[in-house]
Structure formats: C-alpha cells, structure tokens
Amino acid sequence: MLASNYDGMDRSTVLGLIAADEAMNGSLLSRRESRIVNVFVGSSKGGLNNLLSACSTRRTKVPPDFLMESLHTATSDAIARQFGFDGLRMAYISSCTTGIHSIIMGAKYIAEGRGEIVLAGATEASINPLMLAGYESMELFQKTPQCLSVQ
Image (cartoon, rainbow, N blue to C red; front, side):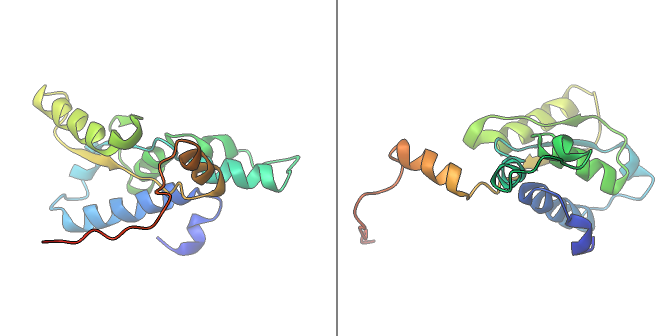
C-alpha cells in the first residue's frame, strides 16, 4: 500500500495495515481463500491520535469518515477493506492484553467451528502528550534513572 493511501488514518491503523500485509505475504492463502478471513484486531487506544489532532487544530469541520477512522474498530475495518475479507470483524479492547485477547478469541472462534481462518492481533500507537500525562499521573514512570546489573 502506498504511503499516500495512509492520509487521514490514525497511526495505529497504519501500523495494523503494515502488519497485516506482512502476515498475508507470509501466509499460504490463495486469493479465493482470503475472502473468508475473519479479522480480530483490536486497539485499546486506536484513533486517539486522530481525535487529538482534530482538537488541537480546533477544526469546525471534519471529513465524513472522520469518526469511523477514529474508533477502536478502524484497524480491523481497514484491514478487511484492504484485503477484501468478507468474514467477521471484531475489535477487542482489554488494555494491555488486547493482542493476546484477540488471539485467544480468534483461536476459540476456530475451535468452535465458527470459522476456519482468523487474522488476529492488536496495534497501538499511543505515545502522545495526553497518554504520557496519563501514565505520569498513575506514577508509571521511574523517578530516578537506575541501571540494573545482570549477573
């Protein structure tokens, strides 16, 4: 996918599309088989960068697809559109375990016989001033630098 096609997409969606492209290139799926792929890709903070950008520029108008591109479902939807997947689209949110949650739910979906192929995982791109302030308020950062010796 050309970089110009990423215009307006949140960073987490772009990373998800790149990862999905790598997964598909490494798979043995034929074009016909890929139509039935189910997409279970989540993001707990996906779309946040788009929202922050819109707020910081004080836009009075946004593109028609702005909200859809800013939701946590944007990555799974973009992957399905990019590859023409007609299967189920799910976007799990479970904080730091979004990726493993998506993979487990995809495996469960296959084990229950509800589908044969699932592209599963998660994507995040949440390094921005708002998230850093939130992490700092939760005291997740170390106050003084320390080096741990490995013995």
